Image 1 (tube, rainbow, N blue to C red):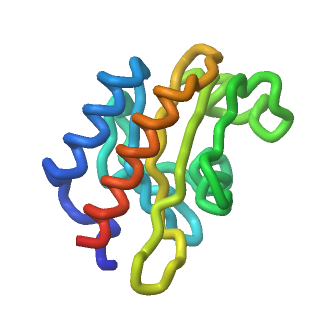
Image 2 (cartoon, rainbow, N blue to C red; image 1 turned 90 degrees about the vertical axis):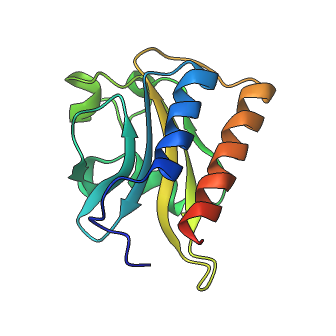
Length: 142
């Protein structure tokens, strides 16, 4: 898709900005994942533009067949000692949906939101999240 390490684009930033506003979360990203890292095509709420895949939440969401949610990271043994949980930005909630390359059907990235407090998504929030994730996937494939 030749998107890794490209410049920010308003069409992607609009989606992460909308996620932060509508879902009342401090962090949202459109993340592209390669063998070693996660790279943020769009990022709201974090200064970093990439991170290691080995400690990424999105690496788990990339492999999930459906919406991947961690309601409280401290209660999940996969993430309780994660550097992003025990140190800044102190992630306590994560929701991510894999974004597919429509030509190959392979997952290439993740649309996600993160919060610094545990929470549950209600049905309305799930619908908003899924709409944003679907729009992000369409933009990646445009």
